[in-house]
Image 1 (cartoon, rainbow, N blue to C red):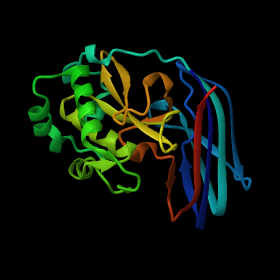
Image 2 (image 1 turned 90 degrees about the vertical axis):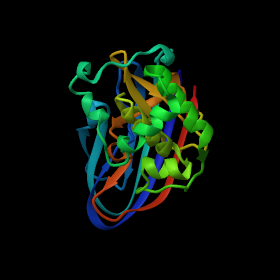
Image 3 (image 1 turned 60 degrees about the vertical axis):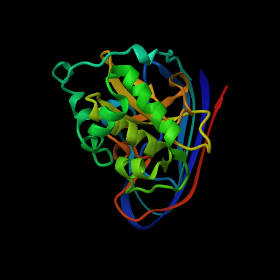
Image 4 (image 1 turned 120 degrees about the vertical axis):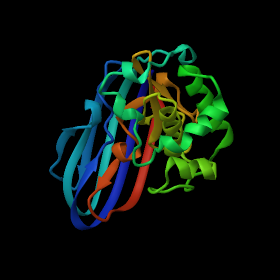
Length: 258
């Protein structure tokens, strides 16, 4: 699938500070960037650095006052559909060392809280079948409500409140998967059927020696997701991280098939 992406972000920074932005599509074997342009107003000195796991990149800059980033890209996604239900999980002892960290608690995802819940709710399921069952349960039992969460909302908060947005759905699935000894991480992404249109958050789980995309909101399929970056949870893949006060003025995202 070929997708045309346009995103625009405007902010005001009252006092000069450093910021990190991650909105560029990642360059991967199964998503080819055919064209892209990142512009900023006013002209600001930008430094590119590698993002988590060398997937995608971050822009580092220092600014005061109003600024605006505009990103345009055409990306061809060649990711094939995969029958996740058949995927098997490995024992923790057999996992690659670089994957083990995605079993650990992180800022928004505490798997310890979910261990008994996963065992009681999903019984003897394992691997991909378990991930799909957990994702289906989240989709069926949570309400997608814009503004229902904020930057302090954890997977536990969302599980108790039974509502949130894509990042919250993803945090719960990540925490549940980790509780079942399945490595899981957050993916920031663009996708065409996200409503309301915005940056999207989905999950990757490590099964059968590779990472697989899962979206508990059911708004995006693996074959039409454009990955921006990955991380332990939303703290690692925020589209903007500031080291000072920042006011959002405008955010606009459109993703359309070509």
